[in-house]
Structures are given as structure tokens and as C-alpha cells.
Image 1: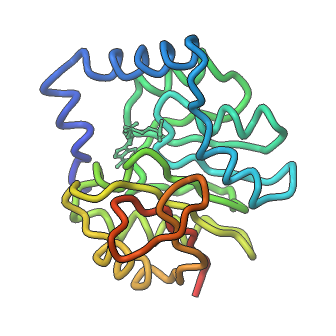
Image 2: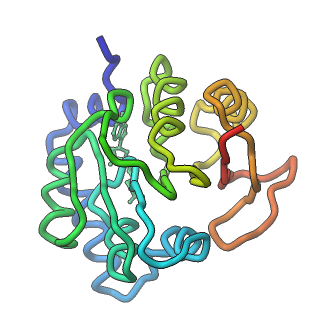
Image 3: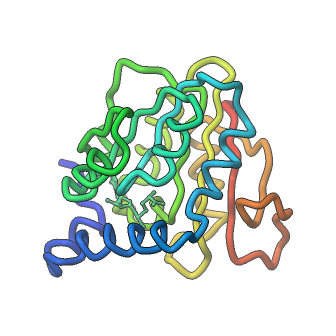
Length: 196
Ligand SMILES: C[S@@+](CC[C@H](N)C(=O)[O-])C[C@H]1O[C@@H](n2cnc3c(N)ncnc32)[C@H](O)[C@@H]1O
């Protein structure tokens, strides 16, 4: 049986957590805050009309933007409240409830984007399986882009070892979604991964 994500445990302990998360991003967007930086980086990696999986899409800010500029987007998230918000706020993409450790879609993607610390919420026992499923859902030439911060119980070296074991090589390691290089002291990792 798949061990539940930490996000599921958080929402069970605090039933208002998901709604508050949705509202936080709605408020930021309404106030004009730029909440699509991750999506811009992914868009720059792809020809328009590419197939993109937003893995752990939450309320859809990344996948919603990618769809709005012409990509074919599927978003998957374990939290039905967030998927409902994505459907309301960003109609168009396919927004699906599901655990990434059980990802099994007929689609193959030119890019998989996993932004917003999603991998740090995965149950540790599922980390390798999620990365293997990312690998098996990539089209030829596809890449996965995973971003998360330090200090969240998933060391960057452990993540990169898990990614290698799942069949990925780092294509490019950055310390931000704005193309700053990754160094030994970086407190954020954006890993662009290609099949090895
Ligand atoms: C901090 S939110 C980020 C949401 C979105 N990627 C963003 O950047 O706006 C973390 C997300 O990871 C999702 N998540 C965590 N574990 C998951 C799993 N095992 N399968 C699918 N989604 C998961 C949560 O439901 C939540 O939406």
C-alpha cells in the first residue's frame, strides 16, 4: 500500500489547510504578484504546443499559465480541494486527483514540472517510485524539472541519488527558477533532469 503523502496528513490534521492555501495564491495573483516564474522557465525549455505534466499541481498556477501560452497540460495532485480550485481558476487543462506514487497515465510528456517543494511532501518510502514514474511518463527527449528548498528533510544529494537510481541524469542544476547557478552553498535546487 502507498504510504500517504505528508500533505495528506497535514490536511487531515487541519481541514482548513487546503482552502487557506488556495486563498493565499488567489490573493497574491489578485494583488499582481508574479506567481508564474516556474512556468516561464518551463515554457522557455519547450516549443509551443508541448505536452506538460504539472506534478503536484496544487491549485494550478504553474500548469494554468503553461496552458494559457499554448501547451497541452495535465495536472495531478493528491488533494481534491486543490484540484477543484484548479478546475475553477484554470479551465482547460486536465486536472486529476491522484498520488504521484501511483501515476499511471496513457500520456507521455515533453516536460514534467514539479514545483513548490512537492517532493519534500512525498512520503519518503515513495520518493524513488515517484521519480521512476516521472521517468516512465516522459516522451523521447523529454525532461523533468524539480524544484525544492533546503531544510525540508530531503537533502539535495539524496534527491540527486534517487533521481539517478530512477534513470535520470542532471541536465542542469540551478539554485532558482530565474537561472541562477547551483553551488555547494545553495539553499534551493531546481534540477533539470534528462533520462540517462
Ligand atoms: C506546496 S504545494 C505546491 C503546489 C504547486 N506545485 C505550486 O507550486 O503551486 C505541494 C503540493 O504537493 C502535493 N502533493 C504532495 N504529495 C503528493 C503526492 N504524493 N501526490 C500528488 N500530489 C502530492 C500537495 O497536494 C500540494 O498540492
